[in-house]
Image (tube, rainbow, N blue to C red; front, side):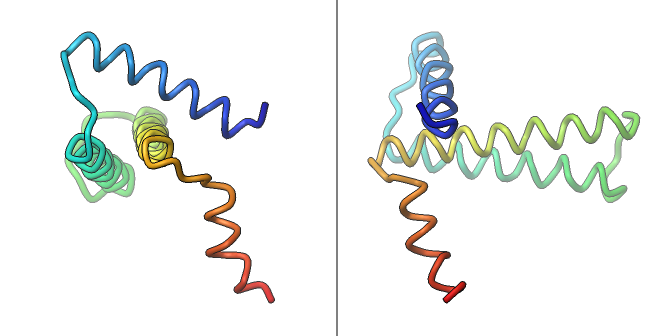
Amino acid sequence: MSELKELSDLSQQVSDLYAARFGIERDATWHLAKLTEELGELQAAYLKMAGQGRTTSCPADLRRAMEDEVADMFAQLLLFADWQEIDLKEALRRKWAPYLK
């Protein structure tokens, strides 16, 4: 099994638990809202790490917080791609590889 598939499956399992616990129906609105939410949280974490936001955390904690937000954003993107039946590896190759020719 590819690493991307393993990460997608992990994201789906956690999302299933979260949806069941909080009674969430994952539809287009939910998927897009979660991507937007996670992007905002990533931006806030980065700005704090870059010294452009208020914080009392140490640099290592700020770095960890940003890494956690990158993970959240990636997991939500995997969930969206899976929901839309998008093969991310193929889409990335199709979109980006032509620039190398």
